[in-house]
Length: 415
Image (cartoon, rainbow, N blue to C red; front, side):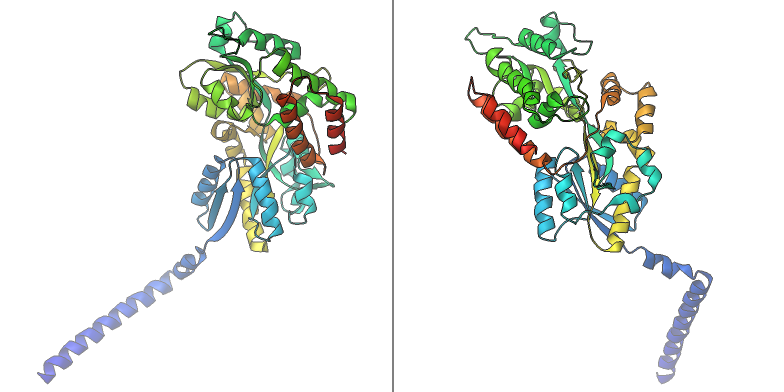
């Protein structure tokens, strides 16, 4: 019995020795195996976005770069993200990357000291490949505070079925604001003759300050003189109360009204095209027209950019890799189709325009980039945005409101 136990123990020890020799031999012939496994430690990047489709680009980045883990938090609007980001910066709880818009807030965020100037983090030739009107919206105090990845412009969508019924030919651009008023009147219909329109000629999306700003700008700048604000204020008042083509205080519902066929013309963002395609489906035909502006004015786009926020050098380096991925030509060429944003890359824009697979709506939107106006950030941008929202609400709440006090308020908020 004793001999049998010794024999079994011997077999076990011999087997263990053989296995150990195999492992040692394998490691000697594959010295990088253990090292390779250790390299796969993930670097986490926290990114906040309001263009929710950008999350798909983050996932693709992860797949191609498994050493990175991107945590994406989505927001319902640029405004909501800006407010939460400002609070997070104050509480020292900001993400590594954040999508910000170029219309307001850039100067405040830059002056907070928490954003990183990107001049030393990205190659100089990167900026030369981007649309200058997008780059300028993030250029403040001779530094770049966000990397433009795309942008949107104001446009006018129209219900082609309603236009045909009203004998309107809208295949060409709306030449001017007089034509906008005329067309909106023709598309306003009181079906049951009760004195209240059942189909409104014009609906305006919720970014009302942006559309208003595009009616104020003249001679390549935002003119803050009183008279520059008078004409658009009067126009807005006429659209609501004199011509009765726009339902007052209804901007949050204008999108759904257009989708349901209850609005003829819809002033909105070029980035809405994907959503409109999805929800209108085959209910009716719609198309897009250029945004009508006053003579001497240009289109003010709204750029989307990724801002790098102070953190450890490792985190910032990882976040920079992600930024470089999103701005690569391959991703830029798909930006319009996947997110609704006009790509920031001028090469991507040119390639899409020359591509016969680009839809007529997309072609029309891309062609408008020739009219873009360059503006730079100012500390008054956010105050002006908030004041415009407040004044537009006042303007639509009461007929015959005196315009001079409103003009004075706007001028003060812009200084």
